[in-house]
Image (cartoon, rainbow, N blue to C red; front, side, top):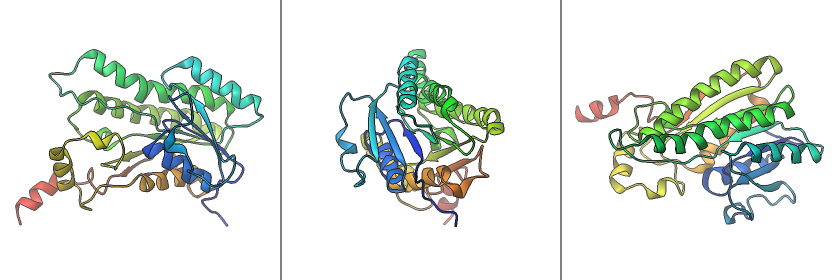
Amino acid sequence: MVSLQLDGRTVVVTGAGQGQGAAEAGMLADAGARVIATDLAADVPAGLAGVSPRAGAVVYRQLDVSDSSGWSGLASWIESQGWRVDGLVNNAGITQRSRLLDASVADLRRVYDVNVAGSLLGIQALSPLMGSGASIVNVGSVAGLTAHYPVAYTASKWALRGLTQVAAMELGPRGIRVNSVHPGFIETPMTASAGPEFRQATLAETPLGRTGTVEEVAGVVLFLLSPLSTFVTGAEIPVDGGQSGHGGAKSVSDAMR
């Protein structure tokens, strides 16, 4: 019977030190995977402590996703363990909230280096260690589906969509699937810094009327890495409570009541 279990598979999760990444690492480990969790910290981040009760299920490695040599080192270390890579979750990301007329080229480059180049480097470094049946999940954002106001962040997530589609096309003949998920307002350390006006306005545009949880994003990532999604590639899945689906029509509908 086909299931969500990932027994015997090795999955790399970037930006796994807290929030969404830690939840993804924990859920994948609970599904039976060996998870290589990466983040910037030299030591195991507190957010990863106890994410899985299974001994050895989560292995931590320091990684700056924007550093190509770091990716090469990670790939070499995985090979030295005698493991192949069955899954990659490009979860690491940063935000920058400058508006269009205030943003600098430096802002765009800094966000791009992590959110887009980091994912490209990961695919380049680890896809040689993947075989048929492997799966890559790029974590985008509702900002990559809409004209969201933080221009550097929005541009990076739109670019990530393009990278995902090219990777799905190029790696498909090898049996490697590549998909993207696009969270809306999820309660994470990143969104905790958003102002109350942002929260209120976003909830007003979310048909389900609430914020999401990291576990709700992790569940979709698990599906895309599991045997239940073996004919799904190039897909873009919003996990946003319906925020991106109405194209602004919700405000019109609400005003007409």
